[in-house]
Length: 194
Image (cartoon, rainbow, N blue to C red):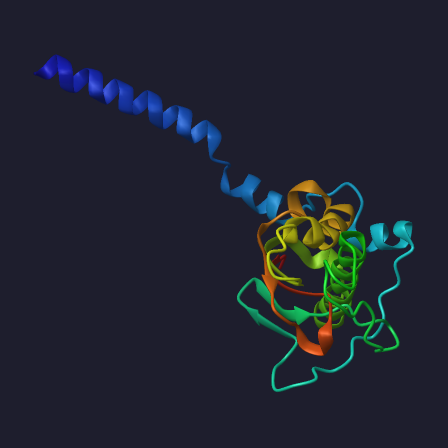
């Protein structure tokens, strides 16, 4: 019995030592929290990609565009309105619009989300990572390519924040209609840096 307990103790000690080598020290963890996971900052990437963020319009109904709770930034659903606040990208994907046009609508949703985020937090360099995306596609019944459409948003986030910080969990669903007959709407959750 003593031999078995001793072996368990040795194994537990070895496992603990192995686990300790995987868990960063407090200094390493603090250092990791302040360093950006991207090679080029998101603000610099916007400039490289030639994307200008406009002043976001105020919400059109009874809601707020963002909420910050702790280190989380919650961004309300955004449609593909154009910088001049015109509707842009209206129609039903699979009837009025192609998948590529739907992707362009989802990408514009992303640009609008980034504009709202910057207006709230000052700089996109404060973003630690995208946590969750909820993408909605105004599509014909039976449409099954919602993920391809919402990739217009997701691919833009990877282009700006990098593979690790720009990819989060995601849902891409079809809707019978969306506000203003818009082709897409996207809602997001983000983790912020201190």
